[in-house]
Length: 579
Ligand code: ATP
Ligand code: MG
Image 1: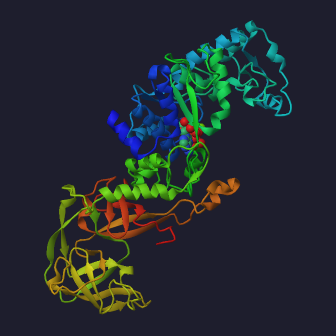
Image 2: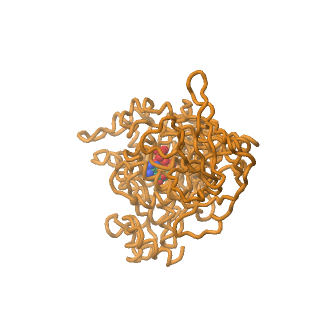
Image 3: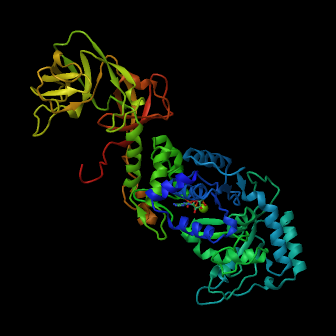
């Protein structure tokens, strides 16, 4: 990104506090001005909109400061990780518009190095092999009021520890029989420092290292060291890691990273020493659940059709729903970066989506709840050109002038709710004796209706004004309402999936035990709609506006002659009190 872009950005949206910290480090000459960040997902699920926030922040910092951002998989948990997730995560980062520096990295690339660091610590008397179970370890760790009780194993000799650790690695012991622990401080007020675990035994196949390892590093041990190995200058993470920071620095002391000159606030000037951790509040959204574990539960319990179900807050789901990547980036930038947890109103995201699509989506005609209208005095079909648009004030775009042919025929479909037999006040649409404009086409006036035995209107009869082709009556009389329509002869049938919010509760996690109870049972409604024929040519993933209704995106379930459209978002925020 050029200097210019950086300047433009800072005048529009004030820099967030992380940017300010990084800028201050550069001004002080730390790390010789170098900025290296990383996005470190665990490949145990699909990315969600919360991850997008972290991606935009980490890659955004690299762009703003001409630095680099790595993509590193924290793949230290062989049981929960899958290649499917590794692939989807890369696709999602790229789709969001970012490219990581160099090759994809994996914590598993560093298994040997981490092991060697651990051996260094054992030799220095800073780590020991503990033969107690994790339950026993937890029970003897003490709490805020009680110091921890040392295990008898804590006083093993270095030689004995080296031997046992080598045999753990060689696969001699069963899962859970031994762990490697750091020799911290069992009396520390910081519970994380009370002999934290470093390795556990898991005879599990790893998606990358296969069966080469049966000891796997604990996250806290692997994470900080991986950042150190990659020479990350700024380790951006979420608030829950604030209290891991002392432990991460202690580990770095033990593996020989250069000490910090100012007690931990930063790395020394002009030389790389160790990553500086900066924490920010994780994104939470109203009416949304953002936790891979919970999203997985929604998939497994079949509340949704999969990770990419358009109701899911996953990037794969939002993409399929039709949310543009640019809208997600704009949203992340606009909400800023907070230092305190707060729930962001999901309508801000929806606003960003409408804003992006309003500027780009071609306009088309589609009727979701069709009722037939017969134009009694109509003889021969009329064909005319209508631009796709969007026709936006102040924007003179060539693309927006592209037209398609629309044909007005004797029989058309209109939206059932656009007709009232007995119109209420201010109903400016179609009614007996009342005129309305058909978008792009002409003026019609209803004369009578036909109903079935239940009283439901089956056909509306109307007359058209042949002197109003194009929509303007020759005599200049004012027509207040305009409605959309499609030719009954030319229309194509489409399956349209109308999505609503997946949760009815503003904070679904407010009741942790019962969060699934707030799943919206009506979050998907499927209708057969009548579309103007040009919509048959839209490709999967293309998003259009159905005029007066909303934005709709072609779904991958479409078949030739039978398109499937997802409602991306309605035109207006139907949830706001001012409709
Ligand atoms: P989850 O609880 O959804 O599994 P996680 O934090 O365990 O999230 P990781 O794969 O470990 O998921 O996350 C990769 C990166 O994304 C981390 O740096 C994490 O801090 C960040 N991240 C995850 N969720 C959010 C969120 N809701 N808002 C901002 N950043 C997030
Ligand atoms: Mg996690």
